[in-house]
Structure formats: C-alpha cells, structure tokens
Image (cartoon, rainbow, N blue to C red; front, side, top):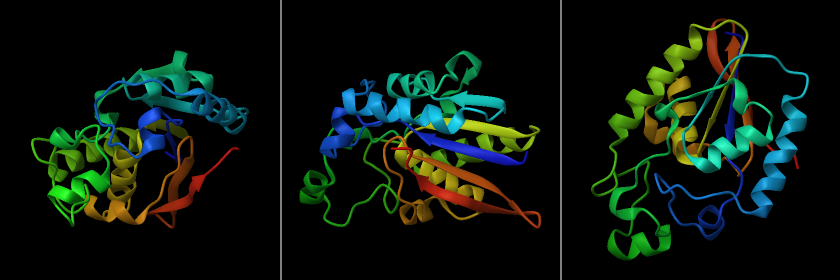
Amino acid sequence: MKELYLFRHGETEWSKSGQHTGLTDIPLIDEGITQAKALKKIVKGLTFNKVYCSPLTRVKSTCEYCGLLDKAIINSDLLEWDYGDYEGITTKEIHKIDPNWTVFTKDPKNGETSYEVEVRADRLIKEALKQEGRVAFFSSGHFSRSLIARWLNFPVSHGRYFALSPASYSILSFEHDYQVIKSLNNLPY
C-alpha cells in the first residue's frame, strides 16, 4: 500500500452542536452535504485499490457524494466510538458528571473501551497494508483520530493530538519504511 486516505463524514446536527455521536444513525445536514460534495474534487483523478466505509448513514452519504460508495466495502470496524451513556450529550454536560473526562483518557460509561477501539483500528490497518496502491477509509472523527494514533504505533489515547474537521481528509503513508502522516485535516472547502 502506498497511501491510506482517511475521510471524515460531513457535518450533522450533532457534530455541529458538539453532541457525542457514536452509533446513533443521523444524516448529514445541508452544510454537510455541501462539504461532502466538495470532497469529490479531491478523489477525482485518484484511483483507489480498495474503499472501505462505515455502515452509518452520515458516513455512507459522504462516501456516496464523493462518488465512491458503489466501490465501497461496508465494514463495521469503521464505526464511530460507542459512547455508551455519553451518547447524544456534549462534553460540557459530561464534565458536570466527570470534570476531566475525554474519550481518549477514560472509557465512556457503558460504552466501548479504548482497547476495543484499538483492536478495530489495528484490524483495519492490517487489512489496508495487504493492498496495493491507494486505500480509502470513510469513518467518523474520534475513531479516525484513534486510527491515526495506531498507524503511528501510538496508544489510542494519543488520538487526542489530532484534530479532524467534518468532511476533512488525511493521508497516511510511508517514509523510509516508517508509517507517517503525509497530511492531516485537509479541507476541500
């Protein structure tokens, strides 16, 4: 594999309001549709050996607006982090219960553990590394940040150091046989 393109889905009501959106299946808003359509300019002219996409509507719509859904393999390993009891609420609201909480520093109550996220990310990276040429992953924010951390052989908790905007794309690659970030949080709009 030469490059891994990592696409985050476009804006939703909850991503705009700061609500944690794990497995709740909500659609893109108009702004998110416009953002997702802008990503098509990035993929135009690129050939992907494999395209993998989360089964969530917001992610599949982003992939579709890019013109790649018909080539995509739907893979539940690309689902967003399961926030458990914190699903649908903001960090500010969570901090009233647990003042220092972040998904990267403490597992969400009744949600997915960082270890479970690590296992999913590692499985996807292993699959991508088997491929020739470019590979595309379409997913969500916190999981994508975790995947970037694992690409660099860091713990999932290091995902907190990578910002990813809605409908952004990042490119993971190699330099002298080392897995590196070629570019991060690129915006097509």
